[in-house]
Image (cartoon, rainbow, N blue to C red; front, side):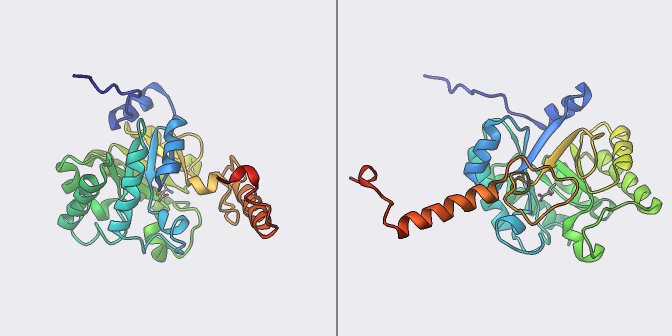
Length: 272
Ligand code: KIV
């Protein structure tokens, strides 16, 4: 009988906590499909987040609200099939955990069972306390998300920086401590002042992963289409572009179109 040898040691929720303890920064990127997830996983990125930003970048919706649980499970299963090493975390979409804690648990179970993912992510603090407890009690690891929580965009009214005022900053810190006490294994902080993010990261023993939250947190996350420069109309200050794929892809498509029209593709070597 031949043993199946694993080439990589899987990143786990415990490894992330260990990384925080050792001062090693955590890298996380969003992924929604097999091919992209395979490249990111092979590059050594620690966490693949199947974000509900799929609603924007994959489906073209204005917000993250329309994406469904079934659609998230479809994206998540494709990412799980691609991943050998990264921890795969999946957003529970809007409307699948806010109404009651039993529904929240059902949604989390569907994601874990049907996609094979390793953890789920939910947005909010004290408002979702019961849902959180029920999911964690079922043995499902949960990543929290505070600050700019895009599922509440119509309540905020704008995508600007959150928690600049003292009252909101205090609530955010209290929520972060609550999420840790409830058993979340990590927390995402989106678009908040760097000073506040530092305070939160120093107050918690679970890892805090930032997006637009400055350098003094335990890790960073970006939306993959943004960091690759595919979404060229989106320019938030926190975004570093590591490629300019919009132009590269656009040039390739233009050239292909021209070659087909000019009867230059396929040539003699490109046929049977
Ligand atoms: O859905 C998403 O992409 C996210 C990240 C921005 C953290 O939640």
